[in-house]
Length: 100
Image (cartoon, rainbow, N blue to C red):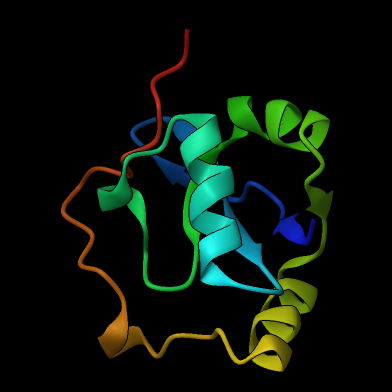
């Protein structure tokens, strides 16, 4: 599996978030995100915003950690990087599952 998560440095509604990507296919990323409880609407064009509290769960499922620049490099190398205009609109909801 080639799912990667960077550092949770972005705060949204009081919760830090990181980016979660695949360096092999969007199908793999969607499948992984679905297993974490993300709805399809949470997809941001080339990544999902994952709340900090879900990162340990994702790691237990096999996700690796990478610095933000490395994450971007992996996306570009895989040809999966989406230009900002091609990304989903962010309407104030990450779509991430709520914290238990």
